[in-house]
Image 1: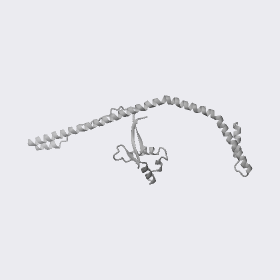
Image 2 (image 1 turned 120 degrees about the horizontal axis):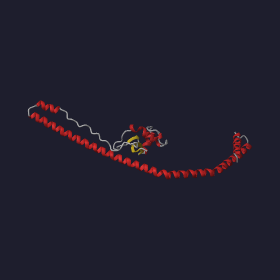
Image 3 (image 1 turned 90 degrees about the vertical axis):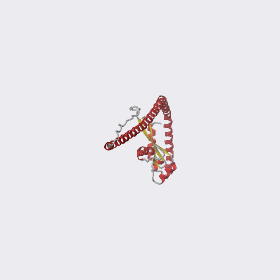
Image 4 (image 1 turned 30 degrees about the vertical axis):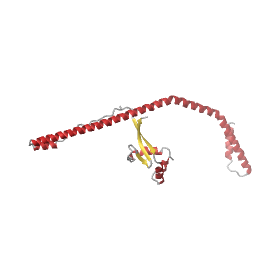
Length: 230
């Protein structure tokens, strides 16, 4: 069957717009049969080429996967190592800051005790004015110690990704039924909760007893995951 014949069949079918008689009904049945046969003919003719193209595509995907998958696996693994290192450096930085705060408090207390002792000695020597001056003299505060995290500042920085988790589906359903939450939250719109978590995270109230967790909607919690920027 040639393209010209196919076009003729289409034009003949388009010419039939109503079925006023049984004869026309029979013509419609015949026309549909010819159309179906033509569809099967072109499908059968194209099938070998389509099968070859599909196989070529599958082979290309398999070859690409063989090359790319090991690279991506190592890329993600090294990203995990980077995140673990950065988390450890953050822990060390916070520990050093706590130790510094304790040391500063110890020095401040020692300075206050020394000032009080000097004021007491001045009072015992009868110099009340000097004692008052000593008491009113502010203690020299040590300059603030800036503790820097050891993670190098590079282009391969870290990204903070907002995530969500449905922890109580019934609570979410009730909130939707009560008109408090858009119905799209019930997964009728793929990606809706992810978009809301990203857009509204900062405005979400923190959940008591769950550090780092916030409530997006009743039954839905959002949190932040840190990882090497992809």
